[in-house]
Length: 279
Image (cartoon, rainbow, N blue to C red; front, top):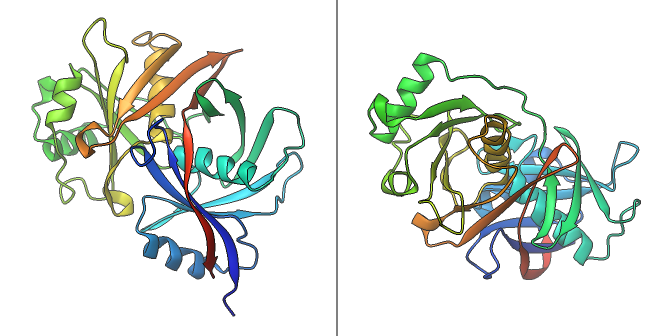
């Protein structure tokens, strides 16, 4: 029988409420079957809906399952931040002072507080290296580009499957759209530098035809993967900010910082809806 479960909807990666990326968080997912979680995630119609569960691994404060309208993800960035924000807001107390440890299908993900908000440690990439010629050709066609428009390309997959391309400018990134039919089955990330002297380093867009989402407003996992790639090659400094969601009328800002050899990805979170969900 359905019962009331504590619920929050959190806006992530913007200091302005309703201008980031929302995530639906069911703060008590205990006892729900996979199909019940998927049905609710499809109904919310957000890029991600999460379910907080008791941990099954020593060292974790809670376990998180992350669903899109098209299936479950092993890891995703803005749901990680929004769910930790909601868990703390509901009275969650981490075992280790100052660090929240999330268990998810990708493993343990530590989070810490920063001046910009919560930040997660960017997971290691499970797939890297240049895109294969066939994949790159598909991405180029889907974006309506010419091959010479692409400055660089890389797999930056930390779970969702991101294939990324670097373009010449943020302006070029903002002018594009993706043909979901051509890119079916792919997760496509695009980045381009803002002009010298700008407040932010790059503009990012994330297209997700593989999970039934055309464009994700602000994407933590993609930004984490891009950070591994672009700081690793020296294309970006170890600390920078990225903007995302501009074409969608959002004001997303993602903070990246290298601390003690690890990359941390974070930003502001705001609880916009609180109550119960009957599940």
